[in-house]
Image 1 (cartoon, rainbow, N blue to C red):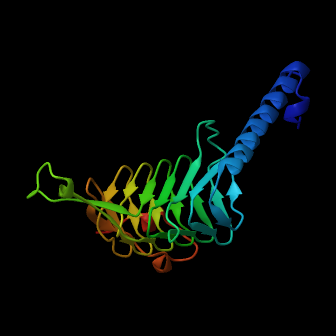
Image 2: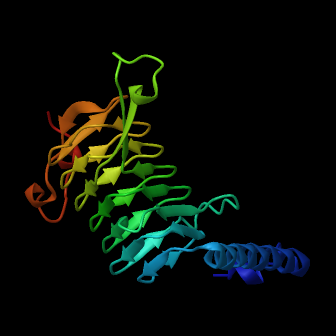
Image 3: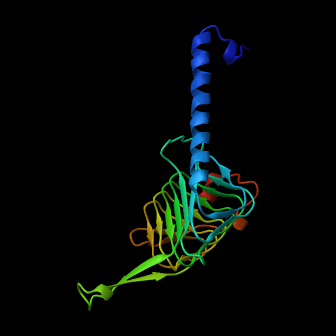
Length: 226
């Protein structure tokens, strides 16, 4: 069996240009990682695996526990970065072990905290922030009509959040929950629940992983149940 690199149909010049493009993409990605590392002002504890740049700003603290992956190397978008902000001195962002955060995500803690557990999967373009805005309709047009509150956000273990979802302040997403893409979560999510919509509401439940037989022999066991 012939090796792909020794096939007569592959010209040496084409192989050279292919390797050059791969090296150029790797070099550009690494240079952007170092550039945003130089621009970051936030105290970072831990060493996440960076497939895309991490831009961390603020006066608070962020902690990565264990193996945390930021970015997806299979989608090398040169405009992507992971933005983490702990604005106040009391603000804190914590991310647990074996958590994957896809490209172009933002985690913002103004005065409270954002805690993300272990084995969490967060899709592309997700925004998580501890801010909640409350509109007082009895005071139209007055400065006090819009109240801003900062409440902690908790995302427990084994949670999956779809792309471009928004998680607002004061929300707790329990273990094993699923958040659909483009959802806006403004209330607590129970364990193993599926939430979708704007605002997000309960759609169904999923089976806990402990209920699955090992190994998974039939695809029917992967279907959700109401």
